[in-house]
Amino acid sequence: MSFLQIQDLVKSYDDTPVLRSVSLDVDQHEVVCLIGASGSGKSTLLRCINSLEEIDGGEVWLDDQLVSGEGTDVDQLRRDVGIVFQSFNLFPHMTVQQNITLAPRKIRGLADRVANDRAAELLQRVGLADKASTYPDQLSGGQQQRVAIVRALAMDPRVLLLDEITSALDPELVAEVLDIVRGLAHDGLTMLLATHEMSFAREVASTVCFLHAGTILEQGPPEQMFGDPQEERTKAFLHSVTAAGRL
Image (cartoon, rainbow, N blue to C red; front, side, top):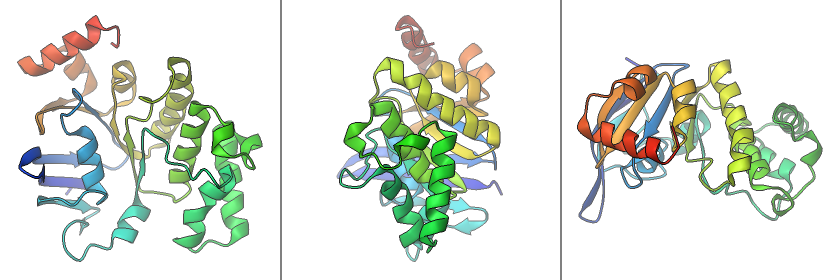
């Protein structure tokens, strides 16, 4: 069994199906990029994986353990599977350090000193060592997103989900955030990314999945998906992306 296995996942809102029997296997240390038009189900899939959305059918398995459905220890699941959103979601009344250390202290039970040392180490890594006592509204969008990534990493997740993390950023700030993700991929962190940054997906992905109308219509290595897609819908999507200068 794969490290992360999604089996026949189904999700609807009222009578509108959003995910239609989605299945996906992710090996440990793999980077999977989810591409597709807005509304294709990318974000919903990520949110279902760590139970931010209740699934209507199917299963999610992590390292041979069922982590979906009735009886799931959601707190444990979210220790293992972190998520970073496009809108940062930092607590505005807390400093950067407080944002990063809150969950490790409250959920993992780390001592203040240990949590603070870990936060300092991660902030150093992303070039924000001097921002520990700063509040989110004093940071640029790119800096806030780097803090959001650090906050997720502070929990030492086994899998990291990234939901369109550059879509709310000005173009000049995108590169600084993608550099962080590039480094995490190099370190071997298992990641699933929903992204519109096609060139980045082509560079870092082990597997690229094209979602259309709530299904994974096509998947494969980036060289095949971007160089020789088989499905007409995939070809049309990538053509439109290329025409827009995104690939």
